[in-house]
Length: 285
Image (cartoon, rainbow, N blue to C red):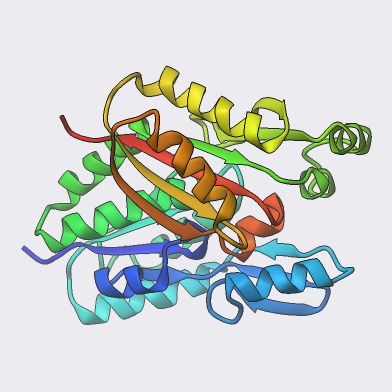
């Protein structure tokens, strides 16, 4: 049985060394500052993006990969062997990336078996699914086993984003100008999550970062009780706030593992600098 190959896109925010170690193919989205276009995690690093973001008067926009960009990756893998492909992508409720991958599949599915998966998540919320899938593929798991496994992990994972500023949510059309102004004046910190259908929604709004972190801890207790957890923390520029959240959670939960990743330019363009996130899922007992 040929090994399953794993494809994803750049919004999974998987560190490059992890992708290379596990043989994960990545198709980048793009971030644009006016007429300047950069491939996420290829032409511009996360740190370079946030430096440019804070120093630019131009609000960045983002764009999805074309079906041809996916097709090129699928063709390359087809030439390398006949193992099936599992292609896992950013929530279809947030981007047309999943649709581009589906179109590419129809252009080559007579040559190779491809499953295109709508993660219904974003950033490492589905990056952890991709990594788990790649590790399972390395262990010789079948396509069916891997698809069942990632569905189970997705169902048991909880995601909370803590946004530092309301500016980017307002400019992205998620909240109104008046709400953004009042929220900023009152130091309101929105806590966001992702719904079962893959859409960003506001879970709560708390005054001040410290209280917001405490609220995240409360919600994780409601989600998991006293079960041991795996935690992944994501940050934009600098890990200080993420490390503070880590310390709070470590003091209240039985933590089995901790990992960090950096939020890339495409997700960062919508969430803004200073955003942190925690991705939690239960350890096997």
